[in-house]
Length: 225
Image (tube, rainbow, N blue to C red; front, side, top):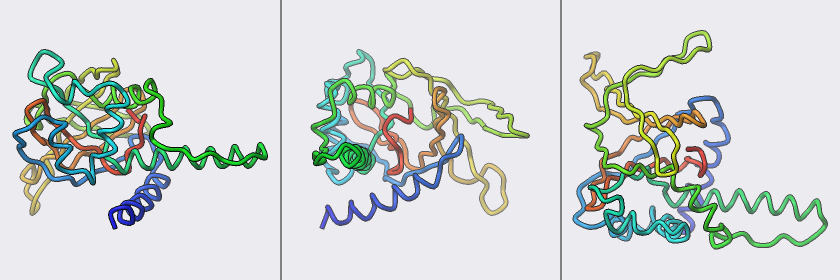
């Protein structure tokens, strides 16, 4: 049953992703937040539906110490959490490419699995989702991104450097509620300086003993940061 549900959600996520290709593309997630008296890896183990493949990819990348202990020597990390369905979709996309290549070359296609991802590729996929400091929603200043006549202006927020050395711009924005300005929920946005991908994280501040998780949406594609 779990595999069937994942397949359905994967199909929907892929359809959504294929239809959303503009600059500063907006995508969001809905995983619940909370406080967990365990390591980040321990938290992942409590929710295998969302994080089982993530754990495998982390192990493949040789980055387990960041999720099981305070490897940064401080209070832990902030992980922009890549969930299982993003990883499954990535593998499925690689299978499509393999099928197309095999057909054009007149050979039988090989089956693509998570184990086929090299350690280097796995590491490259994850290091720019890891910020080597603990950042809560309340720590991120208000900001705004506006586009006028094709020109994009950014105000407020904060810029951070990932474990992989890339720059991410984080900002929060408070929605209106019942026509009252700045009285609604506060949302966290992440923008990649490199790819210009913008992600709205609807659920954040998943707190563990080794850091904070702000989960990325199911439609997030590995490598977009």
